[in-house]
Length: 89
Image (cartoon, rainbow, N blue to C red; front, side):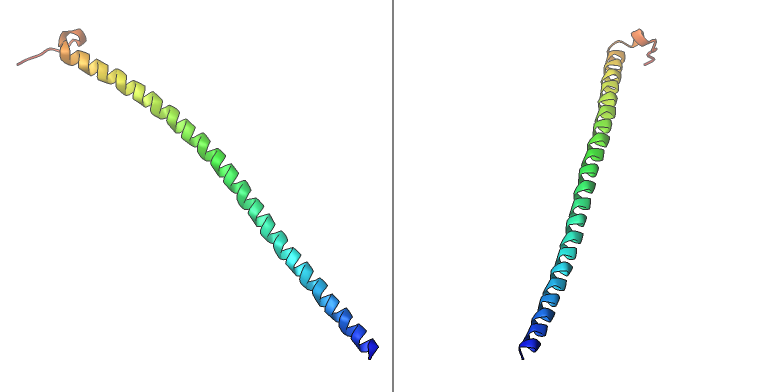
């Protein structure tokens, strides 16, 4: 009987070792996917910041142009002869 108990113990140990490897493999997959997700998010953040900075620069340029146009329109409205505009009322 001692021999049968030894085989049973070996089988139980083998099952435990297999379960441990399965758990480690599962944890490894989860860890890898978390790392991939983290890398994606870091890259996404970097790309997004870069694109937003570019858009911000373009908006700044447009705002400056608009301010210049507003001054020109304001000046033209106040003094039409400066811009060669003939007023006919």
